[in-house]
Image (cartoon, rainbow, N blue to C red; front, side, top):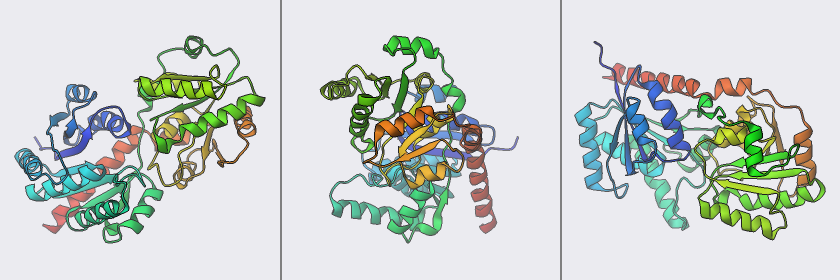
Length: 377
């Protein structure tokens, strides 16, 4: 029997979040052609047992820092022991640690992947961010085979930031497991549970409740919109319970406590997308790599009301439901227009950004790089 190439993926955790959710969906789809392992170095995460049950070999290997000699050596031993052909790391720390361990182990294909833009290097002080930028540029220049980006905006940004590594950059669009988003509850039941009146226009958001996401802007727009359109309501899904409670307090302070619903984090976002009439997204330019929540919402065929970014314009090549706004727009007019517009057709977006399509692109990438390596040796 022909032995499948061994692929290792390295990430901090398999807990809720964009990277973990995509791994949960895509890694089992690679098992027909590759032996797939995933290593977590911070916490195993909620998806670890599920992936193990589906045939992915899951390892937890604590690595305290990206430069940890012990952690790098232990990861290299693991790669060497399993005969890894591909090491695919994620985000800044995973990219650095993975490239070093892969080089030490003699793993022929070493891939780094960048998922966000301006917060990829997480240090706040400019001098420390500059240090991280130089460190990663040199790692990729000398040790990485490819550096993957999820959007052209990301690839262009980092080409300017890391010019020595730019020749190794390549685009790999994300995918979404649309089948896993299929609602399990009826829209009428969920709307009734939340206390949303029949006939109300529901503006929704799903995602992290973090500063750069600018949820405060959504609340401010909501207050202005419902003043002239009292039949609008806003559902903000995500965050821990304390964050959801904080949003409720903010909404109450704006006088729209009865118009804003904050159910918190959910493992079934599809149930909520199913009740939205439009999706609002206020992340600024040069922040998101390829926002999964926008892809998920668009797959339900709803208008996307968003601050214009190069990445969203790239996504708009496959979806004509975007309505771009500015920070000083009239939210009542823009949101009312979105609710009144015909529902967009998501067929092209679902075809290009499906998890199956991403799996196909990933398989082709691994095989191409392995073939190129074999031709050189």
